[in-house]
Image (tube, rainbow, N blue to C red; front, side, top):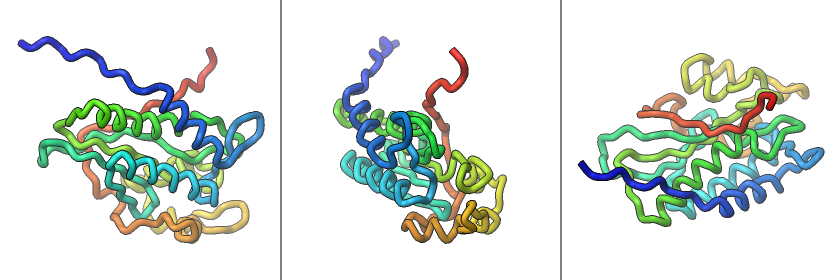
Length: 200
């Protein structure tokens, strides 16, 4: 039996730099962020994430709820993808790491595999879920809820914010309404890295 491979080490400085660059979009109070879903700031953060994914050789898919799926192919065409991710939207007084760490940490996994020229059997898909926070458009986890079949697509499109703007209209306005059917993707597994939010 072959000896187990040594654990891989990511480039922590690169991950930190990516987190800090993303945090410059939608600066908030006390060093945090205000990058609420489907705002211009959200669109800017999405575009930055897409550029980083393309630079890493990933192909981007976007579904009807604006969920982003950045794929690195595996060696087995029949193997279901392993997904990793979280969300890029924030609370009005959100932190720099809530959600964002899960997305950019997933991207750093890809970058590290690329650096080491490591191929994986399963494809890996880095995911950004739309409107996880739910502060602008209730409820929280709206887009992943549609993906999972908990919410109806048209019902989600009709959700309104405090100014009466519809989710579906705002998704189109910022240019992130994709053509891919929500929930059509199949997963082998999904992993989410998240910061500790409880008391210490």
